[in-house]
Image (cartoon, rainbow, N blue to C red; front, side, top):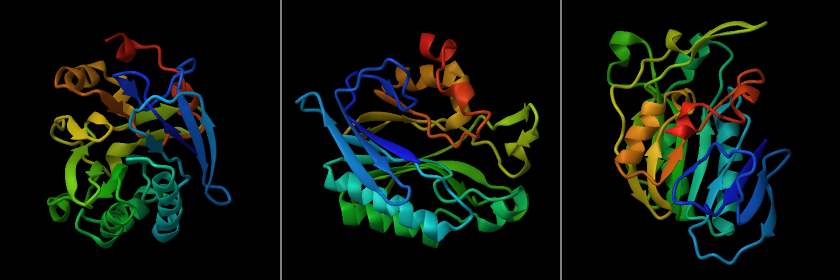
Length: 248
Protein backbone atom coordinates (compact mmCIF):
# COMPACT_ATOMS: atom_id res chain seq x y z
CA UNK A 1 0.00 0.00 0.00
CA UNK A 2 2.06 2.88 -1.28
CA UNK A 3 1.57 6.53 -2.09
CA UNK A 4 3.72 9.16 -3.68
CA UNK A 5 4.33 12.85 -3.22
CA UNK A 6 5.51 14.50 -6.42
CA UNK A 7 6.34 17.90 -7.82
CA UNK A 8 5.04 17.65 -11.40
CA UNK A 9 7.87 18.49 -13.83
CA UNK A 10 5.56 18.93 -16.81
CA UNK A 11 2.64 21.20 -17.58
CA UNK A 12 0.45 18.17 -18.21
CA UNK A 13 0.82 15.08 -15.99
CA UNK A 14 -1.41 12.06 -15.66
CA UNK A 15 -1.43 10.56 -12.19
CA UNK A 16 -1.00 7.21 -13.88
CA UNK A 17 2.77 7.58 -13.63
CA UNK A 18 4.59 5.93 -16.52
CA UNK A 19 7.97 4.13 -16.41
CA UNK A 20 10.77 6.50 -17.32
CA UNK A 21 8.96 9.65 -16.17
CA UNK A 22 11.50 11.79 -14.32
CA UNK A 23 10.19 13.23 -11.06
CA UNK A 24 12.27 16.01 -9.46
CA UNK A 25 11.08 15.26 -5.94
CA UNK A 26 9.60 12.08 -4.56
CA UNK A 27 8.41 10.93 -1.17
CA UNK A 28 6.79 7.60 -0.41
CA UNK A 29 3.87 7.35 2.00
CA UNK A 30 3.24 3.83 3.27
CA UNK A 31 0.03 2.74 4.96
CA UNK A 32 1.27 -0.66 6.15
CA UNK A 33 1.49 -1.14 9.00
CA UNK A 34 1.41 2.59 9.62
CA UNK A 35 2.06 5.72 7.63
CA UNK A 36 5.61 6.92 7.29
CA UNK A 37 7.54 9.04 4.82
CA UNK A 38 10.81 8.70 2.95
CA UNK A 39 11.97 11.85 1.20
CA UNK A 40 14.28 12.08 -1.79
CA UNK A 41 15.18 15.59 -2.92
CA UNK A 42 16.72 16.07 -6.35
CA UNK A 43 15.54 19.53 -7.31
CA UNK A 44 14.83 22.92 -5.78
CA UNK A 45 12.15 23.83 -8.31
CA UNK A 46 9.48 25.99 -6.71
CA UNK A 47 6.49 24.02 -7.88
CA UNK A 48 3.37 23.02 -5.93
CA UNK A 49 3.83 19.83 -3.97
CA UNK A 50 1.03 17.27 -4.30
CA UNK A 51 0.51 13.94 -2.55
CA UNK A 52 -0.78 10.75 -4.17
CA UNK A 53 -1.88 8.48 -1.33
CA UNK A 54 -2.53 4.80 -2.01
CA UNK A 55 -4.46 2.61 0.40
CA UNK A 56 -5.94 -0.89 0.38
CA UNK A 57 -9.60 -0.37 1.21
CA UNK A 58 -11.78 -2.88 3.09
CA UNK A 59 -15.52 -2.94 3.91
CA UNK A 60 -14.71 -1.10 7.19
CA UNK A 61 -15.31 2.57 6.37
CA UNK A 62 -13.99 3.91 9.66
CA UNK A 63 -10.74 1.96 9.46
CA UNK A 64 -10.31 3.15 5.89
CA UNK A 65 -10.86 6.73 7.02
CA UNK A 66 -8.27 6.40 9.77
CA UNK A 67 -5.70 5.17 7.24
CA UNK A 68 -6.52 7.92 4.75
CA UNK A 69 -6.48 10.58 7.45
CA UNK A 70 -3.05 9.46 8.63
CA UNK A 71 -1.65 9.77 5.11
CA UNK A 72 -3.34 13.13 4.50
CA UNK A 73 -1.94 14.54 7.74
CA UNK A 74 1.52 13.28 6.76
CA UNK A 75 1.12 14.95 3.36
CA UNK A 76 0.20 18.22 5.06
CA UNK A 77 3.21 17.93 7.36
CA UNK A 78 5.47 17.55 4.32
CA UNK A 79 4.02 20.69 2.77
CA UNK A 80 1.62 19.33 0.15
CA UNK A 81 -1.11 21.65 -1.05
CA UNK A 82 -3.28 18.85 -2.43
CA UNK A 83 -3.66 15.14 -1.64
CA UNK A 84 -5.10 12.56 -4.02
CA UNK A 85 -6.91 9.50 -2.67
CA UNK A 86 -7.74 6.52 -4.91
CA UNK A 87 -10.94 5.19 -6.35
CA UNK A 88 -12.92 3.37 -3.63
CA UNK A 89 -10.99 5.18 -0.89
CA UNK A 90 -14.16 4.96 1.22
CA UNK A 91 -14.52 1.16 1.04
CA UNK A 92 -14.34 -1.93 -1.13
CA UNK A 93 -17.20 -4.33 -0.44
CA UNK A 94 -17.35 -8.08 -0.85
CA UNK A 95 -20.22 -8.06 -3.34
CA UNK A 96 -22.59 -5.63 -5.11
CA UNK A 97 -25.27 -5.97 -2.42
CA UNK A 98 -22.81 -4.88 0.29
CA UNK A 99 -21.63 -2.04 -1.94
CA UNK A 100 -25.15 -0.66 -2.12
CA UNK A 101 -25.69 -1.16 1.62
CA UNK A 102 -22.51 0.74 2.56
CA UNK A 103 -23.00 3.61 0.11
CA UNK A 104 -23.90 7.11 1.31
CA UNK A 105 -25.09 10.41 -0.17
CA UNK A 106 -22.62 13.25 -0.59
CA UNK A 107 -24.20 14.88 2.44
CA UNK A 108 -23.64 11.82 4.62
CA UNK A 109 -21.45 11.31 7.67
CA UNK A 110 -18.40 9.91 5.88
CA UNK A 111 -17.92 12.78 3.46
CA UNK A 112 -18.46 15.10 6.41
CA UNK A 113 -15.40 13.57 8.06
CA UNK A 114 -13.32 14.22 4.95
CA UNK A 115 -14.47 17.83 4.71
CA UNK A 116 -13.42 18.30 8.33
CA UNK A 117 -10.08 16.65 7.54
CA UNK A 118 -9.47 19.07 4.65
CA UNK A 119 -10.18 22.03 6.94
CA UNK A 120 -8.01 20.62 9.72
CA UNK A 121 -5.02 20.04 7.43
CA UNK A 122 -5.53 23.12 5.28
CA UNK A 123 -5.09 21.33 1.97
CA UNK A 124 -7.21 20.30 -0.98
CA UNK A 125 -8.44 16.71 -1.25
CA UNK A 126 -9.18 14.73 -4.39
CA UNK A 127 -11.46 11.89 -3.29
CA UNK A 128 -10.98 9.61 -6.24
CA UNK A 129 -14.10 7.46 -6.22
CA UNK A 130 -16.87 7.81 -3.64
CA UNK A 131 -19.79 5.34 -3.65
CA UNK A 132 -22.53 7.96 -3.93
CA UNK A 133 -26.24 7.52 -3.42
CA UNK A 134 -27.61 10.12 -5.81
CA UNK A 135 -30.93 11.90 -5.77
CA UNK A 136 -32.37 9.05 -7.85
CA UNK A 137 -31.41 6.36 -5.31
CA UNK A 138 -34.98 5.57 -4.29
CA UNK A 139 -35.98 4.94 -7.91
CA UNK A 140 -32.88 3.12 -9.18
CA UNK A 141 -31.35 1.45 -6.11
CA UNK A 142 -28.01 2.06 -7.84
CA UNK A 143 -25.16 4.43 -7.07
CA UNK A 144 -22.62 6.68 -8.80
CA UNK A 145 -18.85 6.32 -8.74
CA UNK A 146 -18.12 9.93 -7.85
CA UNK A 147 -14.79 11.80 -7.89
CA UNK A 148 -15.14 14.59 -5.32
CA UNK A 149 -12.80 17.58 -5.07
CA UNK A 150 -12.65 19.49 -1.77
CA UNK A 151 -10.82 22.76 -1.20
CA UNK A 152 -8.75 23.60 1.86
CA UNK A 153 -11.86 25.00 3.57
CA UNK A 154 -13.63 21.66 3.23
CA UNK A 155 -16.08 22.84 0.57
CA UNK A 156 -17.04 20.64 -2.38
CA UNK A 157 -15.80 22.51 -5.45
CA UNK A 158 -16.43 19.81 -8.07
CA UNK A 159 -17.93 16.36 -8.54
CA UNK A 160 -17.47 14.05 -11.52
CA UNK A 161 -19.51 10.88 -11.86
CA UNK A 162 -17.69 8.16 -13.79
CA UNK A 163 -19.06 7.91 -17.31
CA UNK A 164 -17.29 4.74 -18.55
CA UNK A 165 -18.20 1.80 -16.33
CA UNK A 166 -15.93 -1.23 -16.19
CA UNK A 167 -17.87 -4.22 -17.51
CA UNK A 168 -15.24 -6.80 -18.45
CA UNK A 169 -14.57 -10.52 -18.57
CA UNK A 170 -11.45 -11.33 -16.51
CA UNK A 171 -9.60 -14.48 -17.57
CA UNK A 172 -9.77 -17.09 -14.83
CA UNK A 173 -12.08 -14.95 -12.68
CA UNK A 174 -15.21 -14.46 -14.72
CA UNK A 175 -17.21 -11.28 -15.31
CA UNK A 176 -16.85 -8.00 -13.44
CA UNK A 177 -19.80 -5.75 -14.15
CA UNK A 178 -19.65 -2.36 -12.47
CA UNK A 179 -23.00 -1.58 -14.05
CA UNK A 180 -24.66 -4.16 -11.77
CA UNK A 181 -24.61 -1.57 -8.99
CA UNK A 182 -23.56 1.68 -10.65
CA UNK A 183 -25.10 4.24 -13.00
CA UNK A 184 -22.86 6.08 -15.50
CA UNK A 185 -22.54 9.80 -14.95
CA UNK A 186 -24.26 12.14 -17.42
CA UNK A 187 -21.36 14.41 -18.38
CA UNK A 188 -17.78 15.55 -17.87
CA UNK A 189 -16.80 18.14 -15.27
CA UNK A 190 -14.99 21.27 -16.41
CA UNK A 191 -11.33 21.42 -15.27
CA UNK A 192 -10.94 22.98 -11.83
CA UNK A 193 -8.33 25.55 -10.80
CA UNK A 194 -6.37 24.38 -7.73
CA UNK A 195 -3.08 25.43 -6.08
CA UNK A 196 -1.40 22.64 -8.10
CA UNK A 197 -2.84 23.69 -11.45
CA UNK A 198 -5.99 23.16 -13.45
CA UNK A 199 -7.20 19.60 -12.85
CA UNK A 200 -9.33 17.42 -15.10
CA UNK A 201 -11.34 14.82 -13.20
CA UNK A 202 -11.71 11.24 -14.45
CA UNK A 203 -11.78 7.76 -12.86
CA UNK A 204 -10.02 4.48 -13.65
CA UNK A 205 -11.58 2.86 -16.75
CA UNK A 206 -12.05 6.34 -18.27
CA UNK A 207 -8.36 6.20 -19.24
CA UNK A 208 -9.21 3.79 -22.06
CA UNK A 209 -11.22 6.46 -23.88
CA UNK A 210 -8.94 9.11 -25.43
CA UNK A 211 -11.78 11.44 -26.35
CA UNK A 212 -12.32 12.15 -22.65
CA UNK A 213 -8.70 13.17 -22.04
CA UNK A 214 -8.69 15.24 -25.23
CA UNK A 215 -11.85 17.07 -24.19
CA UNK A 216 -10.40 17.87 -20.76
CA UNK A 217 -7.09 19.05 -22.25
CA UNK A 218 -8.88 21.25 -24.77
CA UNK A 219 -10.91 22.71 -21.90
CA UNK A 220 -7.66 23.80 -20.23
CA UNK A 221 -6.72 20.89 -17.96
CA UNK A 222 -3.04 20.89 -16.96
CA UNK A 223 -3.28 17.71 -14.89
CA UNK A 224 -5.38 14.66 -15.79
CA UNK A 225 -6.35 12.40 -12.90
CA UNK A 226 -7.32 8.72 -13.12
CA UNK A 227 -7.68 7.41 -9.55
CA UNK A 228 -8.05 3.66 -9.89
CA UNK A 229 -8.91 0.58 -7.85
CA UNK A 230 -7.41 -2.05 -10.13
CA UNK A 231 -7.22 -5.70 -9.17
CA UNK A 232 -4.37 -8.17 -9.47
CA UNK A 233 -5.24 -8.90 -13.11
CA UNK A 234 -6.49 -5.55 -14.38
CA UNK A 235 -3.77 -3.58 -12.59
CA UNK A 236 -0.68 -4.94 -14.36
CA UNK A 237 -2.47 -4.47 -17.68
CA UNK A 238 -2.52 -0.72 -17.02
CA UNK A 239 0.87 -0.06 -15.40
CA UNK A 240 2.11 1.11 -18.77
CA UNK A 241 -0.42 2.61 -21.14
CA UNK A 242 0.84 2.95 -24.71
CA UNK A 243 -2.50 3.28 -26.43
CA UNK A 244 -4.32 6.22 -28.01
CA UNK A 245 -4.74 8.09 -24.70
CA UNK A 246 -1.17 9.35 -24.60
CA UNK A 247 -0.97 9.78 -28.38
CA UNK A 248 -3.94 12.12 -28.36
